[in-house]
Length: 202
Image 1 (tube, rainbow, N blue to C red):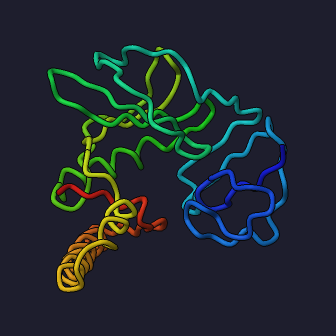
Image 2: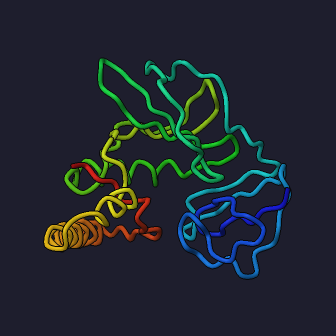
């Protein structure tokens, strides 16, 4: 079965799609691929390096990871990583586990972790980053935010009365502006800002 992989987010679209169903990126000029093909997206800032013949290790039977209990696996995160809900000492966390062969620069992960610690009101807190020796995969242990993302919230807003809808939208715009401004002050530029990448804490 043929499909089109979004060059922006890695989402697999139907072969007749013209716009990515996930992020809205144009798919004009995107080649068709067959199931089994390996597609890896490299970010513009070159923080990801890909080895040749990168295996697709997107599913496995982990029940524990570095002292955390693995509770659930989330839908795949494009071609780059797997995502899990994990738990330790009755606290839940989000685990981003990069696929084998995908090697984020550790200094970049550490910088992002430092920024999250500096701006916890705007950024999901990152607790741990590194290379797991047992699996040979890079990872991030991140604050778990059960409120969903902005895309989910937008769907809920549609059914609100107009006055309430405007009030919520004004608050979203204000908080996003503060968050983006705070990131810019730390010399961080978000290159993939979209509703699915904006988490809602409350």
